[in-house]
Length: 475
Picture 1 (tube, rainbow, N blue to C red):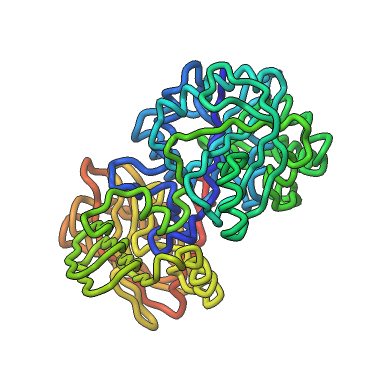
Picture 2: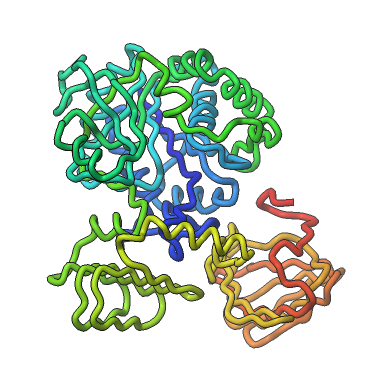
């Protein structure tokens, strides 16, 4: 039996301003459909024969969104493991392998990123099924993407002798070497030789074999991850790793920590319409285009525009006389870039973080386990939000040291706790919460509760909050 391991810890900074640290690309429907990349990954894996519910490894701040998206498509999970900090792929895979090995189990693990696109899901499933016997016999398998161009943004895997071809369209090979991202001329030579594949970041192996190899080649990672998982605590539906021991891990990929060292590495080629959707250029490549080779999403008007990716989330965007450009509009930020600089968008994000701009981390609309809030307006000593609370949900019992809040209900019914008072507010009614006052907001009704919150005070940051009680383990 196969247990998928879905790595969902990335933030997709090259797809800013749509992808941000607290709502990354894997949790968004980038392709214009109903499902996020994370949900599409779950659905694709569920079609594999003899597959068990997956193990999810995700960032702590994404936990409720990931769980909610699984519920939306009615798929179960084996475990949702929360990383207190990002430490790259090897520690994440290690804790998943430890989780899968509980009760002396030894399943085959299929490790996949949550944010990749695979257009031929049926072929992907058949290749995975055909590869399972190779994994069960002790091989550490990586899946290499058959390249269709000299791409400089990916690492490459060089094959050596064939070891198996039964049921695999392009066979299976021993790995000769892993190659860093090349310059264009070297990438062209790789593609023309037909001996190299793109490194997809997907792997398959027996849990026991991976842990045995990790003990030999990177014992410090296995030790830290074992201790962190041993000390982990259950929190609702989540496994919260011990922060001190997990943080002691180096930040290292499975390629460097294990795959480049083990003699058991095998590469299986895949030609399944794969994309890592890692930049606006790669998204432009995989989306349907108009007659002028443009990808236009949202309310867009163009004249004399060629080979552009233009996306509007809220407002009309008009473009005239441009070529090879990216224009991304969101409620609080606009990106304009040439397509050939799409890999460099993360430098803008780094500048925003350096300047402590919230736009690097949060969208104007921020999702919480109880609903969402949207920043409408702000000034030096005030901020205005629109808050939506799901039916039956409630915020934490909390207080603020530096701000007061005025709530106006515009839809639904609110149950308010303010100090020692508990009362209901209906539409067009309001209340004032002075700073330092314990308070809680609940939705006792059957429809979403919507209200306008006006904050005022000397400090309006989201970290000015002290929780006394919380249904979601955030105290």
